[in-house]
Length: 528
Image (cartoon, rainbow, N blue to C red; front, side):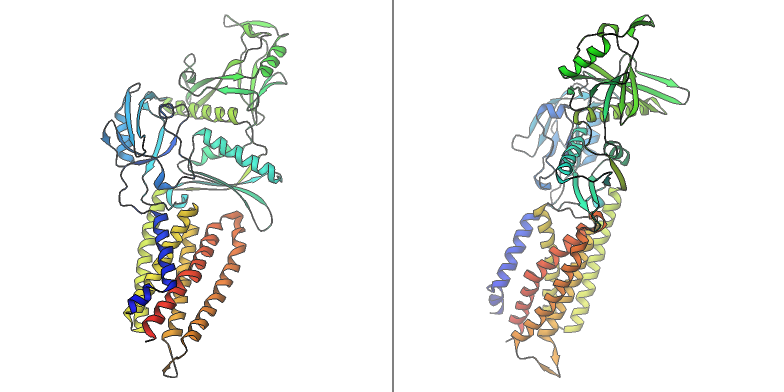
């Protein structure tokens, strides 16, 4: 009879519906086979075959997952990269994914070292829709500050330019958002999975202002004056005419890639070269001025101008540069990295304002995994200890079981809310969950004392008064917590936002859903 009263109680029904929605949002799964596509390089084999770069806003369980290559099952990252290493360049392969049209045929290409490459970066398939922050997944977090105050419109333009630059560079799982501290200072927080600190600094720390000059006159600029930048292997890569050469203390390799200028920029080049002199050098004819390449006002390369370009509005030209390393392989990789960065800047143009790096955090995925395992273990031990203390206090196993169920349900509903709104669970958010669990146990004990406690050796008679008094105490504590958390949404340049937001969501769920439900259940169990 009491069980029927419990499951027909309005608050219990609402609680069960909210819990069900949380489970649906989390979408837990025991099947983690396959690997999820993290990013697809532009103009790569996979891109040409129609495999799309994943939308960062897509739920983790809805992202495209590679299940097999050439009918060989792929269970994890090791399977994927091990099988990829056995492939040869310029061979047709098939890739099976979990999408409706998930069978792709593509031809492998050769990377800088001559190995087969298809242009896909992957990571282990998730088992739920709960998004993990880089504290747990690994990656780089950078806090940037504009060197000058920017308006709202300029800030939106800056964020769009940064996102475009990162996407074109080939980075995914990118979070770029603005933040302000309590003093009103402007910041930009960037979180990127699977990239090292140096790459982020080179892409974002500088404005990326590119200019090509003849003498002191600008011929073209990155972005506005360039209509096409080649990034395919046919017209970009290590310069076949210059290649790599050994130096006294290492190696140097030259890269080159083709670009197309606007007609206006081509005409400027024609006007600036028309009156230059032709000179002989190494049995070739060149103009007596060179094309100087500047990145953020620093000369990065000098290109000789062939005599046949004198006074001609040529739209197609080649850009070159170099890379260094202790070994030839390191020099090749450095050259290709420099080329990729320069191509990105030429496509996107300069950022509207220079940015200063305030703080950089590089986090290892292995440390994050270890933290999650330890946190889960400690949390389980804490719940068992709290359960034992509550059982000793009330001598009621039903009360103990219901209380522990409510505490676990609060955590589940918080994770469901995070999955629904796309909020990342990081260390700050986990700290918020711990606060919620602690306050939840405290509030449930208050309710238990009010409904089960004794005063002067006799049970209370007025159930409504007991519940009302307990909920009044809880509501006061709730409002105090929320008011205390609001300033933290902006404190520390937004780095504490996860803690504050998770705490507010968690205590709100507790006060509006789980704790009143617990009070009703206890009342039904004990009042008769």
